[in-house]
View 1 (tube, rainbow, N blue to C red):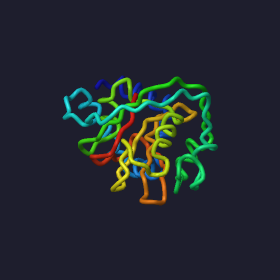
View 2 (view 1 turned 90 degrees about the vertical axis):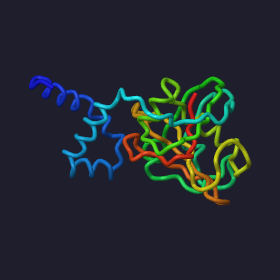
View 3 (view 1 turned 135 degrees about the horizontal axis):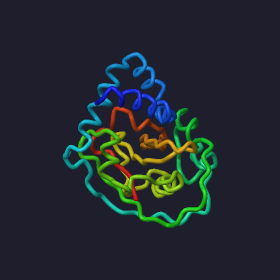
Length: 208
């Protein structure tokens, strides 16, 4: 790296600083307190971005989602047993980033479900999914409705393994939105930064 590139890179980071918003408060504070280590991790990730990695995803099933006229998060992700999806908890982070999200019409789509074979960072999962990694919040909810009360189906309901979807908030920032079934109590809804620590193998990943 040349001396001229260093201020150029620093300036680019300032220009695109809004993407730091994808970090959780905990992750951001860690980066502030361990800046040199955080930069080293980032540099290492860039150096190895072209390396061939082991296969991380195994195809499980394809499931159809009907066309959606419009979708409002606050009307659907509500705690309780009365709605089409029995929801036990909705995290504060989800409410902050997706609680007010509204989406327009989306066409019918076939969503693919993959099993995560090894513990993986989001960036590596996204890389393997290529241009099919992103879905909408409405499509995510529509899939949960198929097993809204814990019915048998393609989603994993045992062992607190999670169902992960990559969805953008209203600011255009990509997040890992996820859900898991808590015994007979219902679905738990949460969201993590894609710069987080990654996911355990056997989790399910949604994509187009």
